[in-house]
Amino acid sequence: MQLQARLLHTPEGFRDMYDGECRDEKSAEHKIIKTMHLMGFEDVRTPGLEYFDVYKKERGTVPGNEMYRFFDADGNTLALRPDITPGIARLSARYFADSSKPLRFCYCEQTYRNIPGLRGKLKERTQTGVELIGDDSVLADADVIITAVKSLLSVGMKEFQIEVGSAAFLNSLIEPLSLSDEDMATLRNHIDNKNKFALKAFLDTKKDRIPKARIDVLTGLTDDFGTLAEIMSMENIKPVTEDDSFYRTYEALKRLKKIDDILGAYGVSDYVTYDLGLIGKLGYYTGIIIRGYTYGSGESIVSGGRYDDLVSQFGKNAPAVGMAINMDLLIEALRKSGINPHKPGKLIHIITPPDRMQDAVKLRSDFMEKEKASDIIIDENAVSIRTEEEDQ
Image (cartoon, rainbow, N blue to C red; front, side):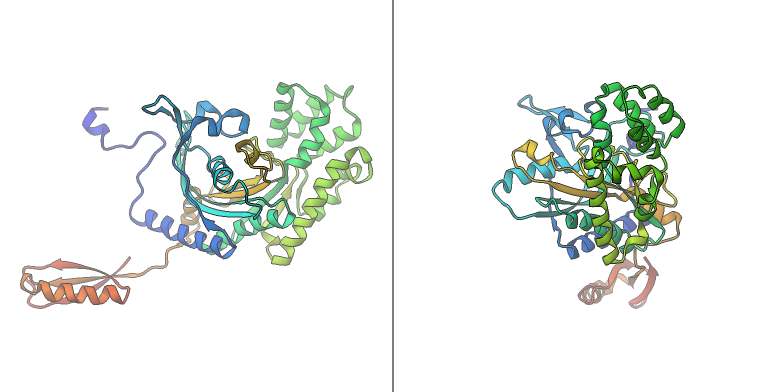
């Protein structure tokens, strides 16, 4: 591609946004942030560039080879933000180190992922989300799920589902197995892909080391989704409730039950299902895992979960839970569903002859005071000022 022609294009994975799509996203952002404010969250903003170590591998965030990295004038390695949560964890540890009060933050920011071969997927994405830091209660978990539901409803979305899983549940099943890193990755991959046959075949190779009851529970993870009541009635879950060796697993289930009760009290249960085989895409999740799906999007439009160990890595011992909405996927899904988050308004064109410009400016000032959108168009052939309305 010649240089001049190349200058008219954006880099792969980045895009311009204009006209109706940009308007729709800004309108949706406004409605979602307003919902988050009503849920008690306050605005926060972190820089788009952080020290690379904020996102280092040990924190369980994005792999280093998927980040945009730079050097500053002092030779420090910086990274374009690939994940918003570690930055807010850092902020919390720096400015609220001695605070015991729960911190409730909301944001709307860009993230950047340098992943090759995305096949049309974006490397720059806008996320609107919340982080609740310093509260390990089931009410905090429920608050984040409820905020996700209320946020999607606020932009007119009706057909969506929030899936809830539990890293604590899954980890309590697989950590006692003492598998190698490679075997652990294989096990998680089969569960995440809901590949029951591959999972069973893999576990069969380990049956001399893993008790049958645990194999039965693990194999069932590919089918353990639906309402919590449906899951609790499944045959493979019975050992979890009856065998003392599954104590941690049962405690994780009981926590989900308490969360489910709170969601029922808020009247949002119809939008929530449970998937005990849900795998967190990031490595720092320790409790609930959240994903949201809707028609018209092949990816999750909501993601998040509980990460009780992340903030402590920056020096503040504080449990935390959060979620983020992918605004690019949300707007795409809304448009495919024929839902317009922007309330149509009118743009008033003030058409004036050149010698009536002062009067046109005064008229426009009057419209602005009445919060009516307008512009001025000079018409050499006009004999007087007139107005015309156009849908925005």
